[in-house]
Amino acid sequence: MALPDYQEFYRDKTVLITGGAGAIGSNLTRAVAGAGAKLVMVLDDLSSAVKWNVPALANVMFIEGSILDEVELKRVFFEGPDLVFHLAALFANQNSIDHPETDLLVNGLGTLKLLQYSRLAGVERFIYASSGCSIYGSSAPLPLTEEFMSLHLSTPYQITKMLGELYCNFFHHHYELAVVKARFFNSYGPGELPGQYRNVIPNFIYLAMQGKPLPITGTGEETRDFTYVEDIVDGLLRAGYFEAAVGQEFNLASGRETRIIDLAEMINGQVGNKAGVNFTERRKWDTKSRLLASVDRAQQLIGYEPHTPFEAGLKNTIAWFRENWEGIRAAASFGPGISSAVRSCVTK
Image (cartoon, rainbow, N blue to C red; front, side):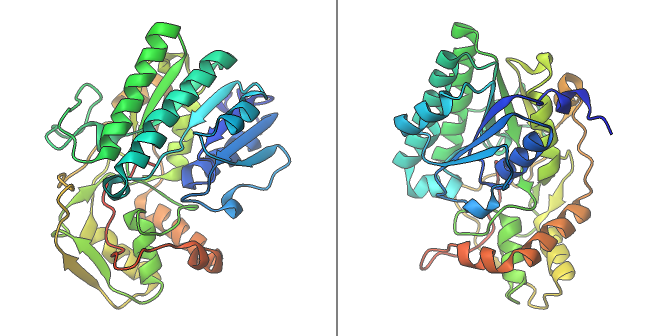
């Protein structure tokens, strides 16, 4: 069966995906390679991912290295990528509070280096993974629309994600680099590992599969706009193809709210965990009691239509955990004395 035009577009292309060993990156790698790309280069330092997550395909080349490493950047850009999907980042809010200088280096300088190399290499399009959870601050009206931005941000991660968008704007206006800024909302799905600085869904599944109570920071009435990874990947493929996306920013979200308490109950129910939940104090930086994004602009510009029901996405994610349980257990990293509590705002 013939592929849609926006997928067929990737046939015989050379594509660079930074952070390609992560959940979104690995699924994007699989999609681009499956569309017939000539070469998909994955550049990832494995600081928060595992190599076995990268699809082992003939047209996929994995390079273990940092986006701050000039040698590795010269190596991948020597191949002449047609498109760059820049997903690599120091993830996420609490990590940036604990390590603000590293956050600035990776998310700030790293993004600047990618833009510089992309411009010099004549890249056709640069797609930047931004964060809808970060850009809008805590006072934006719901549903969140692209016109609203806030300077009152509560973590270094939010600041550097904003900085990345501003650098993209500069390179677009000054150098005419074709940039696209995709703002992710609460991504989840197969490929995402649990860990100290990771997200609520993999951490909840990890704990539930061990028969432990799920820790909720807050009341449980807080909501998030959980978006299945395949829907985000579809949006990214469209972002690389449609001309209307160039120079624009848009939300990639589900457009639906889910309460954290309902999420916990669904996971416990699907896994069969009888341990229930525990409530803990809300973190100081977690200032958003609700998240809900508008996807109207993405629909208009690139035909984006999230289609995965939340319950089905959770079922697929739990199935992936079961299939890869030993590898996940070996890779899960929780620092001493650190709770695996809710990571309430995600970007990838």
